[in-house]
Image (tube, rainbow over all chains, first blue to last red; front, side, top):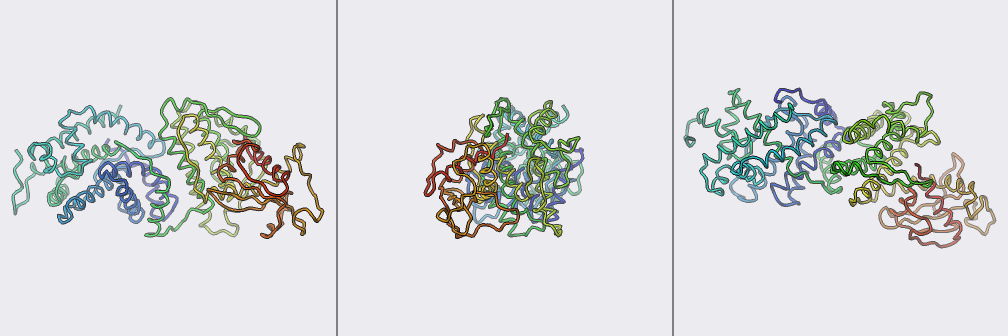
Length: 190
Length: 384
């Protein structure tokens, strides 16, 4: 699945955003606002802060549409990655105001997935199946992934909370995501 | 098995590779994240794995999508537009259509397999249609298609003889889409609504001598300028979204006040025609053309004042007779023969024949029969 071509809709919406079409901003919002709000709310557990993240994310995409690189992944995963980083940054800032432990700047490097209108609908169905895959992961892996991703923890913090070593935490994260990636690639090809 | 990162020197390949899971989850402290990032630039195998894991992590976000409150959309867009103004804005007259199609799409997103099998009831003044949600979408898309035609987009149901019959278009599109799954029909409907907004925005921005809003949209039995057609389509989208929500037992709120106002405004411009139709059926209490100077405004124009309360609060003068094509609007100080006060949302439902004119709450002063005619003419604006 990492090699499929970037999708028409992603490129079109990016071009339209670059041209300053308000209608493209509206479409982007309608498509991804539930994802962005759901993720931000899950990480921050604060609906007001989550809505603030939604405002930030869409303002950023509207101001910097050229930052999206279709060769690196889909619009959906770019927005998901950006949202997660924003939410985690905010969480860590709120928890440790002086620490300044942001995650640094990274390029989202996820493989592409489908995003034309038809494919968006398929993506929603895949999302539902992903939940099934996640719930069938071994308990130890699942709790580590969920605590880290939605809890916005660093791997050291997660290790402490779970009572495991930092090395084990890192290992579980990598293994859990590998299993998830394998299950997903089977989904995509089946 | 994982050596701590040595101060001073860059960590080795295996150490960094072991961090990829944490990195993909945004769970590395800043310094380590930067080191991973740096390493990825020169290590194809780690880059490949990082991409795979990042993508897998991205799917975790699908866990719990949340439907945002409709008001958040306005806030998000206005904040973004304040930071970078639009080059091509959405025309104001398309605002209600944008909002209502987005709300219906959000409702559809949450429909389960069984919900798609429910039958919605679609009342109009001549009866009640029964349609499954996907068939409702076919109906909306078939009528939206007349706007597509006007804008030069592909008509989803081109008629061989060029004639337009909205009922026939709906039947034809429903038959065409019958074999497709409801989600495909939803995608098809949504794509057309988006294309309409985008195309109208570009047409306005092109700055032609005749504004795009003045383009005439041919509905077959009548025509509306594009600016009114968008309001009409928003109105029907909302009303049928209510019908679907009712069928699946979910709550569905009304449009924003500014959009209710636009819908009421369109209805008041069409009401004189509906009043003429009511008289033609012999069901009207007031004959046309009563001209004695004691009745209404001595300058000659007979009108009922419609006072919209609650959402979409506003006041309108509705002429009792169809004005001449180029007639100016009635003077604002026209003395009405009657006033009707009614809730904005209720008035819209009345125009959609979703309410009984005699039972919907309202207040009347002045000539009761003229006011009653107006309330009874409103449902005639509905279509199958």
